[in-house]
Image (tube, rainbow, N blue to C red; front, side, top):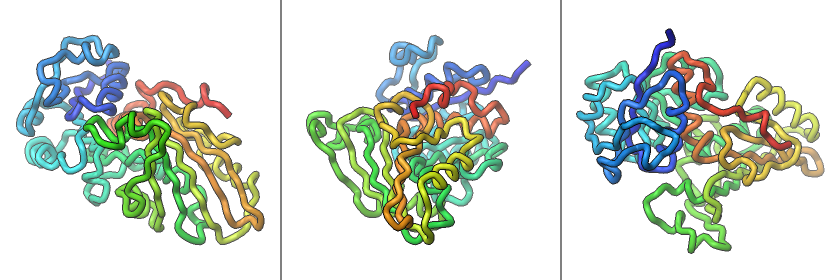
Length: 323
């Protein structure tokens, strides 16, 4: 019989935590051991997330209590800067536990595996400390990676996210009234995802994030200056070759629309446009920030690390894509 693994989620109140619960509920080899949320303590998970049909209730669990649950997988879905006490407790008492951190706390830590499954392939299985990439960072890296060796300078990345990316704590960036008929720029230099992508790709990247009035989904438009002239057909063929075997990356001809990616589990890359002279390329990538930008990517990492089928519980993507 196939082994079933127990999994717990710390910080399950947020949008990403809810998506993770849905994926776990659909997984044939994962079973929810606990879901921790201070604000929902005592309430039934099924009352907040109909995808889950068990009797589990949210609990307000501190680090020692999380360790005491004995889950084989623990997902940290907490805001940046909040994971340390839990990780320290797990490191001390349960180093064999698979821990996936969705925050930025360990993305620059050499002791943690950086879990963007498509870049590169083959090193995630058996890992026990995995840092999940940022949502913007995932879109940027997948858009830039096939052209990395041809870059003549820092790629310029204009990103627009739905307001779910700002989390559930009230702020200007998730206030629908302030966002109506608006595009809100923020953190225009030095954003954590700018530093994250620069560190991972080994080249400087310039990133300008914005929030839009829609709830979910990212559009990332990337401008790249190249060392040599290229043609659009060659560029598209290169992207198709690089991502040919990737079930959650679809290369399309036209620039993808964010409205067509919401609620779907992969990335669309397209709109390959080359300026006169051939040395300036613009590429567009879209993804759902809560799914491939967070929960779906975490599930990919969990599946691969445990030696399970990578797409277990993840719905098919390419068969329903637009192109």
